[in-house]
Length: 132
Image 1 (cartoon, rainbow, N blue to C red):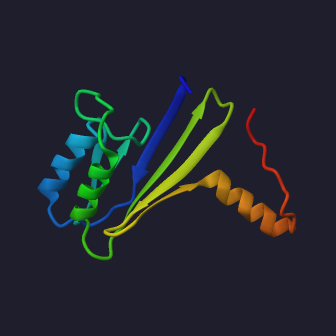
Image 2 (cartoon, rainbow, N blue to C red; image 1 turned 45 degrees about the vertical axis):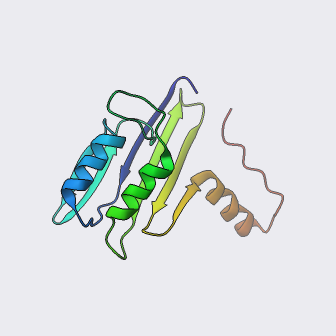
């Protein structure tokens, strides 16, 4: 995946301390751009969703980064990260990460499609080969 091109953005969500969120963003996603809408924040980037420091060091403890973001989320809020990417258009990937105060889940759009097509066709053995 040396030529992988990824993009991601989030929904808008409420945080309990916007200045602390700004610091979190520059600490773990230095190339991400903060977005705002009314009293909500979010972020986007022309890169893959992975944590790294401002110097590009990718040896960031993801558990710590996620936990700090969870601590900033207001009750009942969720940060939903949607990423899409490709490598020379040989394949497309899309997925999501849902972060709440207490849980983190990762989803693959391809897995979702496969489950839906199995359900719609009634064929539990259906194989989804959409890359070469």
